[in-house]
Length: 546
Image (cartoon, rainbow, N blue to C red; front, side, top):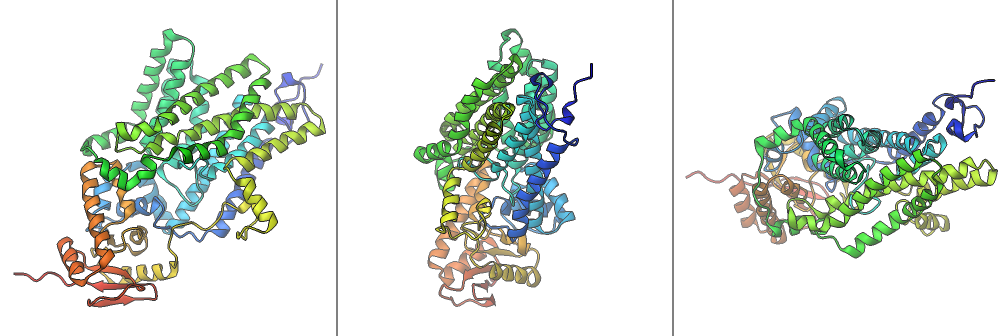
């Protein structure tokens, strides 16, 4: 009697008990197909995006921290960079600084790192889906659907966006891997400690996202049967996390700032994120998560073994905790004003991931039926999940097919659009930055229109008095938040009227040497040292010594 063929020789990857091995496939066939899919998906961005770091991107204020890490002589007079650097996770700053050493262009660094993160995430989803549904082809299709994490699914900022490499994206990329380890080890206190260590190590890049995963898994531990061991498992997991995240805990202990944050500043800086409109949130959540949630419910009817049920129940426990934390999000801003409500609302992204994994049972069931119609239905279901995952995707395709969309790329490239809210004339902005970098002292301090211009630091390598994005300091330091709020209001008032006496007074009070004005505004009686068709720069005289 011949031995049963191994899983490596099956296209579907069914477990031997299913008895439905298909034709031969090379080793690592599904993994190779997944890698090729990720490369093709990311290649659209490599070909289309101009790699300009907009001032509206979070990285516009984080990259200067890495630049300061590499060169201590820059941003010496900057009111933001030296203040935030001691608070910000050293692991992320060091990682980005190392990459900037290898690739000096920040846009390339962001595109390269985000592409790698998306590949890591997709590979993790594939591994986790295989762990849960035990079917390679179904896991491969689910992994392809997971690429839609490149789109802000629920409007809460949960995702890995190509061209962006925010600190939380590193945690999102690690989520399926850590989640799989947790599901495998949830009933063993000793093994859970290592899961906690892994979460803590990655959490040094973005402690808040690590806290989210910790809450998620703590809730699942409490919901897991075996009350006599819950405390020991939770203690082991928590202890492992504390060991892994110890470097950031020590960093925070050295510079901790528990100054209360005034609600006025919080509302000014992030009113939408702190107190989101519930109708908008619900609309985003329903349009993004309803399809996979409904299919996941059907997936419960496709469980075929006690092992299936155990893995599905573990996923459901995690999803229930995520739903609970999402619902509590709006309360967070009142309990801990320094954190935004949207932070907990981001946990809805875990609901999407877990429901997507459970929908793999439906895909598996269709593929296992063996008939051509059922196999086509399995592929079709994956396509439906991909198209509906971001909400409005089908609408985008209809607009493109009927010619009513202004986008020039194909339907599958619809999310590679121009970034909104950025520089309207990038060449003029870059010309200004090149002049500032070559014609001014390294310790020069600039004042520019405060609502944007955050990327001026990156391209000019010069200090900037204030931008709206600098308000991110509210998360780290209440004292620094007060300083930022006062600086921003001063600058905003100045640019409303832009009177020469007020420009001189503010500049001399804060040591500002250069003031940028849009060329469309009326010029004032101050020395102009640079001008292009978009911007002009005034040189402010130093105060006279008594």
